[in-house]
Length: 380
Image (cartoon, rainbow, N blue to C red; front, top):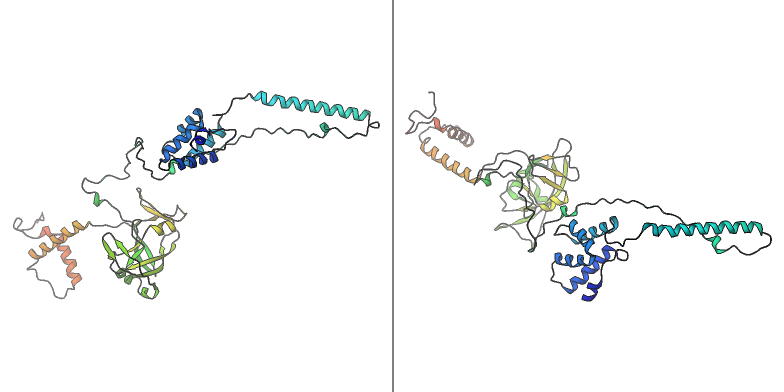
């Protein structure tokens, strides 16, 4: 088998690129099953001849797939004269013209003799008269549209790969301050309508499943227990926490849009101990409905084939958990130190008290302190 592989050299007049390349690859893979695909392609290209091998290597940039090499061989053999034997075009066409002229002369001669001796000869016409006229087929120029297949390849990592063509990614927005990378993220939470109620959903491609928390579902869909489908023997986990599923809830949700809303039919797994305050749509449904998220300057997403209808993510002010905790600690100190002796009307509800405390804390510089007996507000 090794000898047959070495002896089988590509011949343009006899071999077809696709069948020849695949047959050589099968033989070489059977002989060396542990050989890398790039080495297999290199050994096969050596059997194409020096000129054709150089043309293919100039076009295909490693790493390339088998389809790329086959397309390169077919294009070079059909659209160029690389690897062909040089024959004179005049030598191929001149004998045909001479033969056609001879046949025409003989046909004319036989017609004249038949006209003269038409009553004297009852013989059948000669074979030369029965020959049809040869057809001259003009050359047809065929143009092929070559697509750069290597631009659509998936990520490929090889230990023999030379990382030469590496370029730095261009930032679409101003960079954040050093050490503040966690503050610049934007969520993929958008608004939906479900059961005639406004709700929120997170388009999360890294979620463990399409799910919703039980507490949040109680707020937007009151009678969901009547439509739930029970599941058994399935375990879910998020990070290091084990999730407790109650069942599968199927619902139709709507992405509202002024130009025309879109309805999606989704099955959510209801999680008992899920603390998220929104629905979660994971990668499976993003692929099923063709939801593409654009994270450029104007963040939006599209649904299906209509790429002109863009759904913008609503702007929302999010506070980092660490900053929020520090803010709450400072507020507690302010209430315990500054407002401890302040009389509060008992007629105020708890929400009204919280609103006033929030206002006092926002303008806390106006209160007197040891450093500022009259308060820190200037001009009084």
